[in-house]
Image (cartoon, rainbow, N blue to C red; front, top):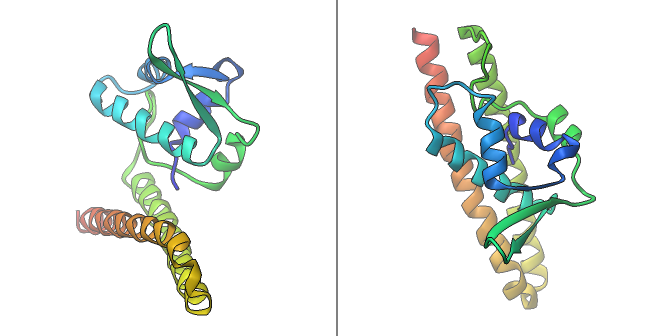
Amino acid sequence: MIISNLILQVLSKPTFDHFSVIELHEHLSNSIDDDIDSDEVTKLVEREVEKLVHLDWIKQTLQEATEFHIYHKTSKFDADILLSAQTSVGLRCRNSTSTKKDFCGSLTDRLKMYTDELLLGVGQIEEYERIEAQHPELHDRLKPKYKKIIDSNNKLLGNIVAVEYLLECEQTN
């Protein structure tokens, strides 16, 4: 699961123990290129926050007075782990000079990450199939997780194809 390094860096700050998507969006808008569409930033923030909720690194609560969702870091939140374990191409930061070599390197890193995640998912699917073969009574409990992993693997395959295409285009230019 890839989470934007820029978002993790922002959330690592102590001032972001409690935040809304709007606050995170505003902070990111100050850190990225002006030519990136605000809607693109909003979608990125929403996707990344959803991933962190899924990981149980942040919890979502509804602030009744404003009807906005407020997010709180949980004890599991450790951005240093993810920041050291991944690189993300995500958004271009201001004052960054990105060369073709850097771009290809980032794409290669991303491709490796997607491939590793896909292999992990394939292993999980195979294990669920083995467990179900041995314990058919667990079928109903395993089926939702099994389907979720298959969906995730399909998305990863799409990501891999897209990154491979970009790498191929960069190498021919």
